[in-house]
Image (cartoon, rainbow, N blue to C red; front, side, top):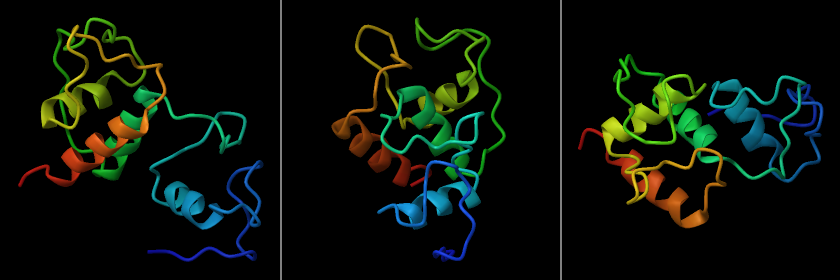
Length: 127
């Protein structure tokens, strides 16, 4: 793991070294788990949408080679979705099962219970 301190220039314009989670945010940026927003911000208090969570976990897994299916697994995530491959990867690995109605709800915030489920399932990939 990397160490980041007050001497390390901030990656994001809205995350100062005095931020409680500065080191963790800088680690996530240095490992390319997060790229932030196009305007150079991280938006640390903005909830994480389920589609972005898929991208974070996919990147943490090393962005593995994966060919997303031509037919979407979820009724609300078409092949044109910017995180289609990452969401389909989560489905293929069992990290996400979606909702019982066949949706993924990509723009919903990632609730803490779902986050626990995603992380638990992620930790068991290939086991």
